[in-house]
Length: 301
Image (cartoon, rainbow, N blue to C red; front, top):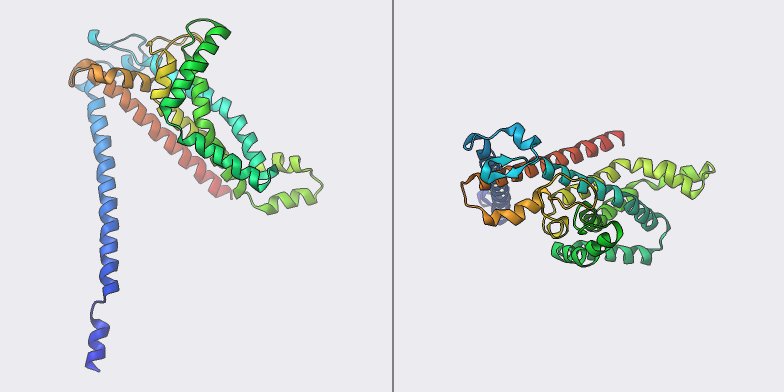
């Protein structure tokens, strides 16, 4: 009896493994939290140095149009505005195509057709950014030059490259959102006399709207943070955009092209870190917007 009691009260091997598993999970979680906090602290600390150490104006930084940190001119408005323009234009181009392809994949295509389209989509996702940028440099820039004149570098070339880059992401997430709509919705609409297209347009798309909006914002997040491909076709001139064909610069293109040419601790270097801080804030804003949309969609369901 005592032997049985001792065996029941003693720690088993499975209990020890469970403890080690929990310890490993919490350790990994703690490391991730420490890493995120460290990254946030580092970028924020470096980003505010322009205003705390160099004593430059935040209002001038956000609204100024002249970028020459060596002469204490750190107007980031052209880069902020260009970043938003290419992001919004690329999303506006990608959304109709993505919804159309997603509808075809989920509602009309046979199983093999859907699998083939998914394979192509995954292939596009895996192509490196430099390849997209090189194709844009060789194909898109000369085409824009022949079509609207100018050098070919600018917002239009950047928009087209970003459109192709974010399209697979928006297609995949949109297709997943459409597939999540219950089949009962479609059957109910068809039983009431609606055509298949009416059921898709009036019922399925509206039910999947939160997921579609989330897909679009995910695509915008990637477009806003894209650096190398945009840098190769945007022109990298810190000027206010005056047209689709005018060379300009985005936040990411300026960071990637100039960070290696500055000395740590100088005004020029601190100003670039301030641009990185703007990128961080916008990324957090996009993520917050995604969470809000997702939560509203869950509440409606």
